[in-house]
Amino acid sequence: MAVVMSMSWAEVTAEQYDVVRETVGWEESAPAGGEVHVAWFDARGLHVIDVWESEEAFHAFFTERLAPAIEKAGIQGVPETDFSPLHRRFVAPGVTGAA
Image (cartoon, rainbow, N blue to C red; front, side, top):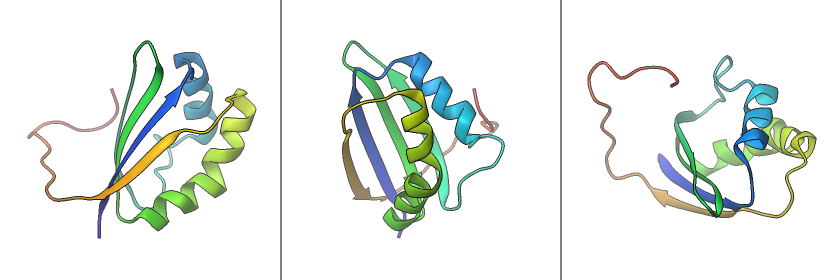
């Protein structure tokens, strides 16, 4: 069952996020089971909403690819993470790729 993963990670900067993104290369080599990724920043830090084919797929990606990149970027602490079953997904016609 597909899941929505929401994450908030205090004090993570856009520069650190970009180091992780470039190191992992998820836009060039999509993670198995990853369907949608949206990230933004506010005064608290990083926020992410992902859609994954399963919670297990996210955990495999985190262990194999994401955790080493997080360490390389010098990100400290632990994010607040939550998983919920996906009820419905809509992608507007013509919306593709990364922005």
